[in-house]
Length: 375
Image 1 (tube, rainbow, N blue to C red):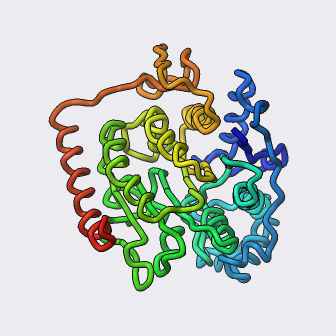
Image 2: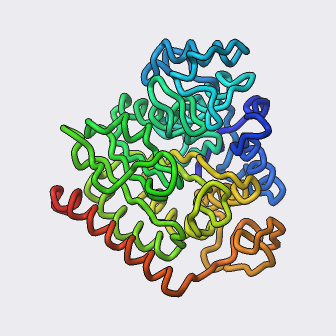
């Protein structure tokens, strides 16, 4: 496996305010966990240090005026007018080096896109990426520069057919809006319903407009969705879409905020869900650009991303279902079974209601998207 972990000591220099739930330290924690067990590099796995994205690259999606605002506030000059650009709220705090960090995170995703595009990596993983809420001239949801959009645009410019699969617990509204009126990129998002969580959208009926109609797919999930329900819906929806669209590259955002116990989200999953769905994507033998995203329990997030890396690199034994004491559902990070969460199986009337709701959403998507494409 030729796999690149996009990271550097430089990106570790920047931090959101201590009071902010978003912790940039998660990427370094992931690297450290992998190093401790000897699964970080070697045998086709390597670390690649990214260069910061340049202004010209950023202007492919973001406005020059907005970038100037980010530069100014990053240096410590803040004005009330900056709120018009979404900057300075609890979800988009101001901190020293903000612009430099955002440029590096975006540069890391662009670096990964180049590596997979040039055939230098079959898998590129940027745990510092996944800022899918940022708009051309507005920050939102801890996101200032939309590295996902920039990476997809770069891949399209290189002539690649791109599917963006967003598995973060929050709907990627910035990414959706960027490609909503074009068929250039197939966007598919699984997320907690906008009825209960920011950014309050991403419903089944949002399928694109004009040339993009039918190229934007959303599956909103109710509170309490578990591994089994999620995996069932994923397997019913995603393989047919990929068979139809036939992408050259998959861009996958993996937010660990889907895990049970995340302080900002209400889903009920373990990191086993990624072990259940990633092998099917890997088996398609097309390049993968994978990014991080949400995840507001840093320890669980880092452990989950470490597990994603081992799966992407073919290091995990599918039959090795370790049992330990701890994990997501026991409310502790003292976990003696490597990177795996303990498997849980939810039952009862509440889960049956959730499964029924998800099944109805899947059928709605099929009517709106699958039928017009004869899937």
